[in-house]
Amino acid sequence: GWRSRAAFKLIELDDRFHLIKPGQRVLDLGAAPGGWTQVAVKRGAARVVGVDLLPVEPVAGAEIVEGDFTDPDLPARLIEMLGGKPNVVLSDMAPNTTGHAPTDHLRIIGLAESALDFAIEVLADGGSFVAKVFQGGSEKQMLEPMKKLFESVRHAKPPASRKDSSELYVVATGFRPNRGA
Ligand code: SAM
Image (tube, rainbow, N blue to C red; front, side, top):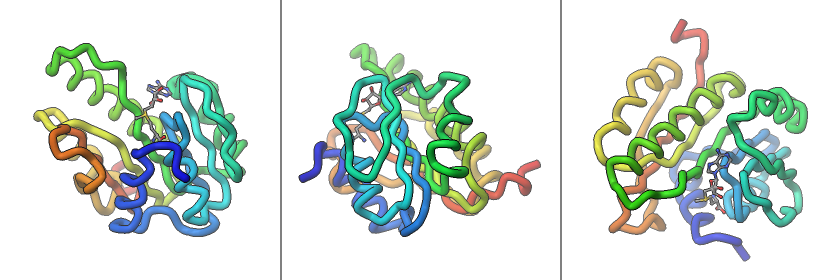
């Protein structure tokens, strides 16, 4: 079985956007307890690496790194573990919430922007990026820079994401780093 209810969100996003293809390298940021990592393996990715601040029980077919994704040594290490640049960078990361909605919103956008910077650094040409964001205004700030770097950028709310939560996902496909330069 899946380790998290969140697994169904990635299943739904992947059914709709066809993100994970057999043979690909997939990086899962904020992997604990491992549901998205399981889905990436099940969908046929050749190499999957999950990263989290928290420990993750081993996932068959994947490797796990315990640490902060902003660690400057990590991009090179992850590319080595994956055997090349990832075709897909996933981020279901969420910061600890404060209960103060505007603060929480800024924190999650900060995390999503850091994940985007990370993805820009490591993604293979033609690659895809998925990140959790929250509705509330500033999620739109990420769209303009992303549209220069990806062929397609969309917001999606998978059915498994609770309707009363402002969570949604930004899904970008067709990474084309040179077009933005
Ligand atoms: N997609 C996962 C699944 O299906 O099992 C659930 C991910 S959970 C919603 C978000 C995770 O992001 C938490 O486990 C948290 O520890 C992790 N996280 C938050 N900030 C992080 C950071 N700076 N580096 C690595 N992981 C981080």
